[in-house]
Image (cartoon, rainbow, N blue to C red):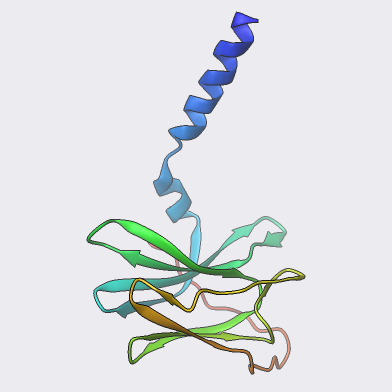
Length: 131
């Protein structure tokens, strides 16, 4: 029994010490926008044979902190204007088949949701990776 407890806690320790930078290296960025000293990051992760949902985060370099704005599978565009983060969706915001609700504001920035985007069929998304 003691052997299993040691193994269990060793595994928990290993998972807790996972390098967070590896997570950032696997991101495929679609857009980064400066917003009042912070950065809006729009990206996704690509897996072999599968693509994950998009993430939109607000990164604060002063506190080295990320706040998740949305994690969704139907984002068309992300923009910033007049202290407002504008999220354009193909229909109502969702992740896969489940509808989601979004915050009205984050870190003093308002969030505007536009659900009027219309898809013209499959498109190739241009992404980049940070080094």
